[in-house]
Amino acid sequence: MCGIFGAICEDALSDTLKGLKLLEYRGYDSAGVAIKTQHNQLQLTKRVGRVSNVIAATQGLPKVQFAVGHTRWATHGEVCERNAHPFLSQDGRFALVHNGILDNYIQLREQLTQKGVHFVSDTDSEVAVQLLMTKAPLYDDIKDALTDTARMLHGSFAIAVLDSNTDSLYLLRRGSPLYIGISNSGNYLSSDVNTLRYFCSRVGVLEENAFCELNSKGATQYSIDDGRVLPIHYINVKTKQLDKDSQGDAMLSEIAEIPHALQKTFDYLTTTAICPDKSMANNIRRIYLIGCGTAYHSCLIGAQYIRRFCNVTVEAVLASEWWYSYYKADSNTLVVAVTQSGETADTLNAARECKRQGATVYAVTNVEGSTVTFVADKVILTQADNERAVASTKAYACQVLALTIFALQFAETKGLIASEQVADYKADFYALPRAVGSVLAEGDKDIDRVANKLSQSKAVYFIGRGTDYFTAREGSLKLKEVSYIHSEAYASGELKHGTLAMMEKGVTVVGIACDSEVMSRHKATVSEITSRGADVITVTPYCTPNECDTLVIPIVNAIYYPILSVVPLQLLAYKCAVLRGCDADKPRNLAKSVTVE
Ligand code: G6P
Image (cartoon, rainbow, N blue to C red; front, side, top):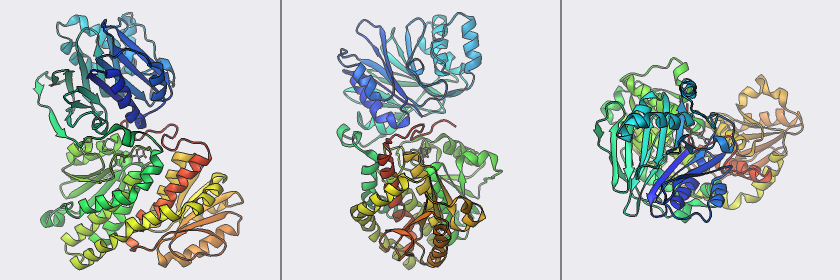
């Protein structure tokens, strides 16, 4: 949540603004930059709204060598310029940006106010910069003042500080991710590893509870606890061109990339050992798949397939509920943490706790070098490429594919399914990217018609049975996320236990019915709904009753329907957003990567 970017290079302001634009998916209610001028003064520009407002406001400023910036997702304090980052220390020496939550900010604020500090914002973050200001005179070396400050902060933080007195940027990290990028043309910092790809190929991952000095010569990392130097773990990342991914209608183009992403992910999954070996597989008594939001829906599907094929107790768990649900993990437990970004705080915390209890942790993630890749014992990388739209589409498809192949390979390793059968399932995969392609190519007119209906509905319900129910949940979440239409998902059989009371004219029900065996039941459900005045739309590869509208999808091996049938639902959500004038890429109140609990 919130994006932090900083640069030390020939045109640090321009690069920082480019970095912020790429980070905008993390929060977009306000943004700001701080630069160090040629006269060693700090100059702040902050605006409510998007990064483009800051870009416009900084037009014409001369080139500078040092800059830090921030794009905000408000946690403490209303959305306004005053509460936007960076914050300046009262004496004007430091500018600071922060991602995370400072739990003890009220006490610190009181103490500092008593010492005569005047606060300009309502945020927790400003406390850090004013505290640093009071610490600086106590030490000869600013690094000691920074570590002292960091030790007094409780909670989570990724902090970057610009100091008008030195030619360094200072970084503090606890709980929230922070990366540095090193290149011949400049050095950078970012709260997101993906953003750094556009500027350099060498990325350093800051340690938990670490402090780092970054200047034009490089970086040195220290422990906040005892001040000792910590080696920086560098990874080489594939660089990218800025123009390619950084503009346009991200959600729509990411849906269009699903066939390619699936193929790449399949090729990777089937040539990489993604499952435990036989002895470990036989020792596993329990599997938990944990995730949040869309990732949780892929866990539900993955758990269904593991249950079906692997003869092991398995459960999909909302990562945010881990702490409240009396789950236990031990050395016979395998935990699969599913997270597109690899940075979701709830998922990371639950995964760390499972590890602490002795479990083996696997990660399914789309971002190489993300925090979860350091938490997990093994990483399964989906190959969806960078996903920018807040609502996950192509990464979700790849997560479901990864968990499907995982279930098959796990069952094969345990000798529960014949290798020939697994080979058949894999052979049938090749029809899937083509089937998705045909939904994309041919579905347009039908999807437009249905989107028109949905966007005028007073409420939309999504229903299904088995894995179709999980797809219904994902379709409903997608619609809510991007179009703000009220929507809920139910297992079809549950309708008559309450929700049928809501059926009347003006309500639309979207049914997913990909399982041929449930089609007759679905037909009965359609009658129950339409006879009460509501409309029904069915996503299916089969014939449907006359009284309901249909979005037809191609026939594929049934195991792949959750990947195929979600595509028209993603398109529907996108089109409803457009019809209702919503920004599908950046829905209100949301952020792509939720790094706070
Ligand atoms: C946020 C996003 C969702 C996403 C969820 C989990 O809530 O808005 O779209 O599904 O986080 O994200 P992850 O990166 O862990 O998959």
